[in-house]
Length: 318
Image 1: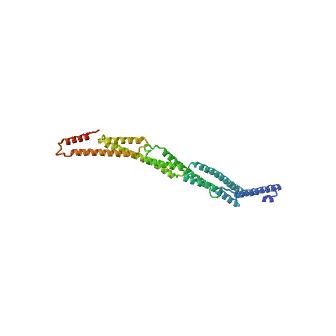
Image 2: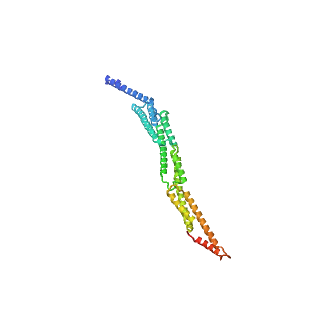
Image 3: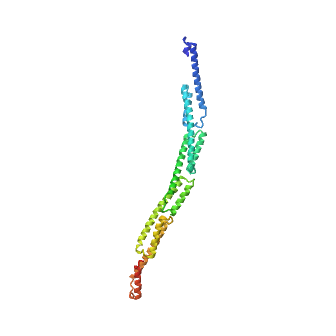
């Protein structure tokens, strides 16, 4: 432009053209700066606090404050800032939608304390992010992750409890400890405010009750079989024979009738043991009596008859 003013070859048209170009450049620069300032003063809420928005805004402010910045640099920084705000708003909408879906997905276990707490935390994060200029989209996402984890844990605990309740508990279904543990688990599962830890504990307790009851049943059955074998020498004695039958029936019934318990087997075993002891004691007493020296009356007919009667009874198997 300066050359044009001193160069004799430069025409008025050239000067007018250059002047117009200068004016256009100045206007463009002014408009570009105005656009940048407008972008900076336009509210970016509710995503003002998003890191990418803060970074883009700081960059635009720095570029705008630098007198050496070109129009292109200012325009690029302005575009970067407005795009960061737009992208952050889309991300916020998406995460809010994901939060609503996570809350809906937690409906079945919403009263489980950890889930209920996570729902409240998520709802608070979503609400705060709209107004406090501190809570970020990432904070909402973190709250969603916490809720999803809590929901999964609660659902898994419930599933494990239902599986435990559905497992076959025969032949110890009727055992008091099994009945009690099952009732506790059923009630714990029905209570929607039960914690995951409480449900897991009740589930484990029920499963363990079945395991323990089965082990006790095996011990009782083995003890019963041992008692029957031990009664072999006096098995024909009526009381012993009756006790053997009762024990045999009790062991068999406990396997199928869902009524007879391990305690009943133990009682039948004890009854057989008592009958065997009584029979053995009677036999021992009889043998001791036969071994007694009956002199000087052993030749008496009444003594001889009594002795023979005792011998016959001891020899009697039926």
